[in-house]
Figure 1 (cartoon, rainbow, N blue to C red):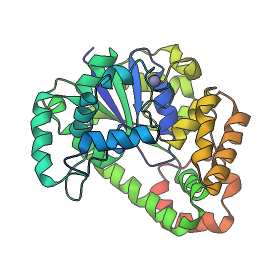
Figure 2: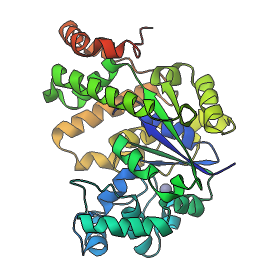
Figure 3: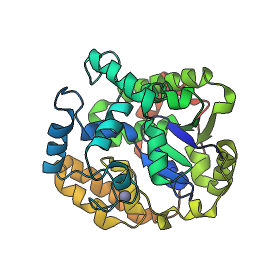
Amino acid sequence: MKRRVVFVIGTAHSGSTLLSLLLGSHPDCWGVGELNQLQNYYHLGTPGAIAQAAIGRSRARGLKICVVCEKGTCPLWDAAIAPDTFSLDRLSLALAELGEGGYLARGLQNLQNLLRQRFGAYTYLLDTSGKAALIDSSKSLSWVRNQLSAPEFRSGRLDWYVVYLARDGRAIVNSALRKRPELGIERASHRWQQQVAGLEKFLAELPPERYHQLSYEDLSTATPETLADLCTHLGLDFNPAMLVYWQADHHPIGGNIGAHSLILKAGRRDVWKPGLGTQTSRGQEFLQRKWKFYEDTGFAVKVDLRWQDELTAEELACFEAIAGATNAAYRYDP
Ligand SMILES: [Zn+2]
């Protein structure tokens, strides 16, 4: 099988962390998580001090790349970046999102182009991990566009595939409001509608054989069938290990609350719980509720329909008026 990268796209709260855990449990795959966060370990916006300053800050804050493993013990990330900082430097720069108002001064774009000609970041991660496929759940469209312009994809050395994970917009806005009540239903609805329009436009420009759309609701109510179908599209053999994702080793890039809570869901509470200490009190309350939800739910994949209880009739009416037409293709009413 030609080595490949699977880019997961979708809005926030669409279940991409769950999808990444499921796919990442396949023995041939590495769910790298939100690879666009690698830049956060680097603070690439400070040219001239790219490596050392950021590494120093990261060390000072005790950051580690793998959300699961202790520093220096990750079989995948440490192979990719240890022992020197050069490989992380190179990876970050090769992957960085540049462009107008980007992290780097325009001059550094040339540096990135030069680097990309000689060094393929995804090829490198596949080489060091020994895996056949990477699952990049960064989700951002600009990120995917930027990565696909790299020679390792354009030359055909690596295969690529886009998976659009869609979900009922009412669930998305409810999750957004649970996390940020001050957003308000109107803005949350507009935001979802605009994001989905952007995603649909992006997909319309892709060759049909390059992408697959699946719904969070199918994934969580008919998990084996939906995964088997997805595997066919991705050129992977279906492997039952994916259905017991909590038994697999995961090495996603750290920093994401969704990833943390799903790692918790996979029974790694000791890893996730310390994150509580770094949150504001509202953040702590949010995490506590999330934690309770996953404790109640257990390991099994179960569809999350909390929006049905949590959105008021007024909020639902507001959502329908703003985004009902767009949501017609995504509605899930069991
Ligand atoms: Zn790890």
